Image 1 (tube, rainbow, N blue to C red):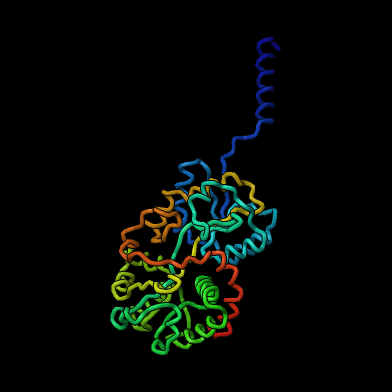
Image 2 (cartoon, rainbow, N blue to C red; image 1 turned 90 degrees about the horizontal axis):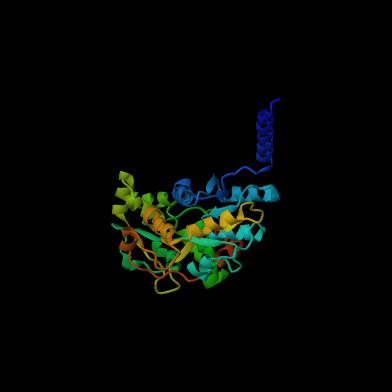
Length: 343
């Protein structure tokens, strides 16, 4: 072999060896298990990728199903973050040892203490209020006051609400236990059940449509569903919003019950650094504004501008109860609802 060819050959061999020994420049990524509707979170995840170059792999499913999957996968799980829609689910994940603490000055400074875990294992990302909605034709809002009053006999056969297996209702009852104790809350729940207009069925939007159609006069539902219907161009939603109004419950008492969507870093996360960057992004000013403008959810970051729809509802007093207590009282709430006949 000619000398020049030998040199070329040796260089080629060495270059190949270097390529084999050098790690490939893989794209940084983070894996998210989420019980949120994909349309309510994916636009933000796509924006995160555009800004950082970090790819987000999203797996959606029911909260209980994803928690079971995480427990079964254990340290072999590819998930880095668990994103869910209720404080009760966050509490169950923490109790199962699925989370690990996150040390982030940005999150500690941006999020109020009552909207994040005391051990920094999960963080609230958006707020929704679970309040009272009423028929404009059949109810005078001056008749309304707090949640306890919904057990009054004057509402017999006039209230629509979801079933007891719904996390939002469980958290509402958990907050009632925290404020009033189990005995008072159980008496209230029995009175509320006696006032049901029908057997609980469907989601929150279904309860609002039922008020509009005359099946009931009052409903308990989350504010962001009503906000989404207000922003919708769907005629059925427009018709319902024109017939149903929102009432801020318990303004002279503990305040309107609020709950969070939230997120936690999983114990066996393999992309922890990227995952923490994503949590911080979701708590940033721009993301918090997106929650308000696109989802009609209340931001958890103080000072964030609200959408015109949220502003139109007016200011309200929110229950200052630490969100963690909703999860802590969840099991008692479920047993209480079962005893009361809330199915």
